[in-house]
Length: 158
Image (cartoon, rainbow, N blue to C red; front, side, top):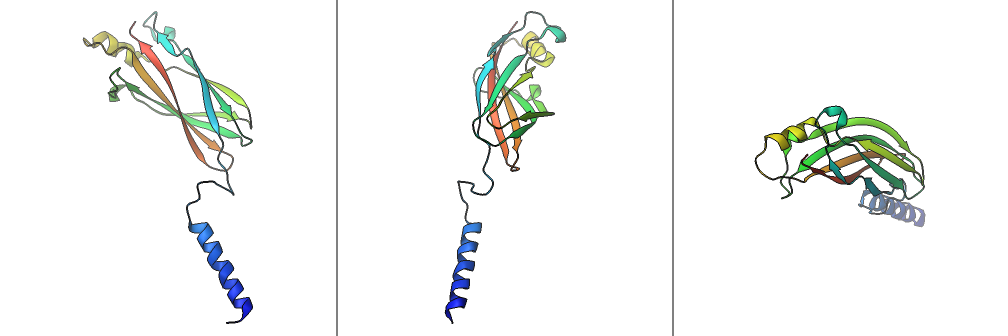
């Protein structure tokens, strides 16, 4: 083989190895870095049981690099104080469209205290309070990476 053929073959093999290996650091399409510094209020108490009076919580999300992203949806799962999931309360994926600028901050207001939670507290004889609401936020950054972030809050029996 001549030198040009060997060089081209080496470049082809190196390229194939680079593109097929799982690289932890995304060089070509890096992922947005997001953090949740605050959930306010973290502990929610229902003062009245009608749906309009149920408390909300605000989740603050910071972008800590220069890649903008969009909040696409959120879902909520609920757990007893013993860590057991309560499937009947689950809030399935709810679409939402909110832009998070590069190195920006957004606040999302969510209503994790639903009428089903109130009904469970009223109908349950056991002491499951506080119920933990795990709010899963799904973001898509401008490089088409999907980022899941989770926030928590506690729901206390009224």
